Length: 237
Image (tube, rainbow, N blue to C red; front, side):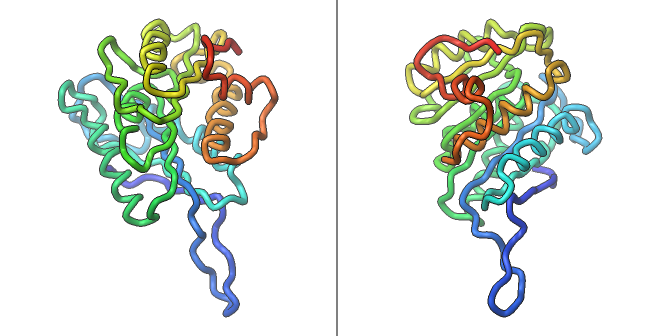
């Protein structure tokens, strides 16, 4: 993947000698941006799909402040999914392998938007991944679920999304329940770019990352309940 921004919950601590030691990493959150159905154009840092994830990553970083968790916001090499190539899935898998090589066996949480959500959910079978969240995900009919076995999946879709299909998301969630713990949230009036009710989108991502990494909930009781509600249908917020 192209180089992106990496954020640390804790910038490090001083050793007895007064030097700053690298933080003790206890978890990783990888934030995956969206893209297009078909494109081999290189992804740039100023493209809207990439910029859209800056506040999401910032909200997660804020929620994990003081912890020893890395929040990473890398970029896919190309903008498109590109059919059977599933270009961003290979990028994510490569990134997960690299993180495992550097940080060892620490839990990884994936948070993706649109095409990035599809890629994150596909890549969730990587042994490092424990949980994955799809925000306004692109989950067409026939998208596989078996790779989610033993994982925790959260899918979130807005009622005003005209780009990706909420109905396909809810159908996917039902299929995924056969192999994974699945929570689903419907955002009233939420749009695809996550601009409408932006604070709620950010809070959902941040709260999910906290809870998935074993930290206590810091959100409202209703939000915490929606994120962890895996026994029934979707929650409307």
